[in-house]
Length: 79
Image 1 (cartoon, rainbow, N blue to C red):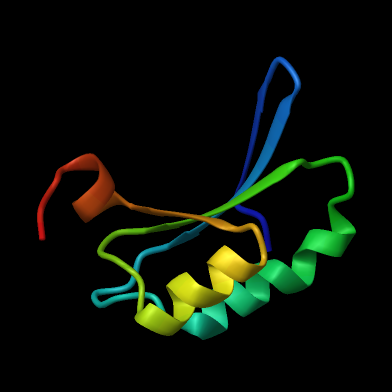
Image 2 (tube, rainbow, N blue to C red):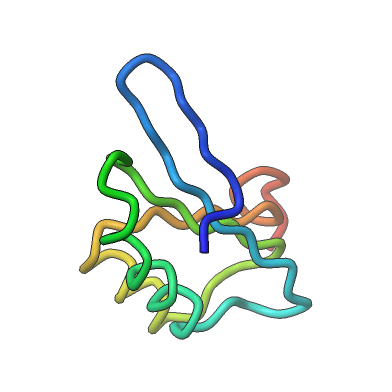
């Protein structure tokens, strides 16, 4: 499901967070894609990971308009 709801101006973002010790796989991205239809008032969806994402997860997210954010890579520039 959605863990965080972020609102600013016209942006309405649903965020799902994963605290795995490894890269997040495609199953988590598919899960978020599956709940998108229940959140029709949101216009963006994001999956946040501590580390990163598998190649398959990145491809699926790209195809289904889901943003991916890695704390380690996108915030701390590690890895």
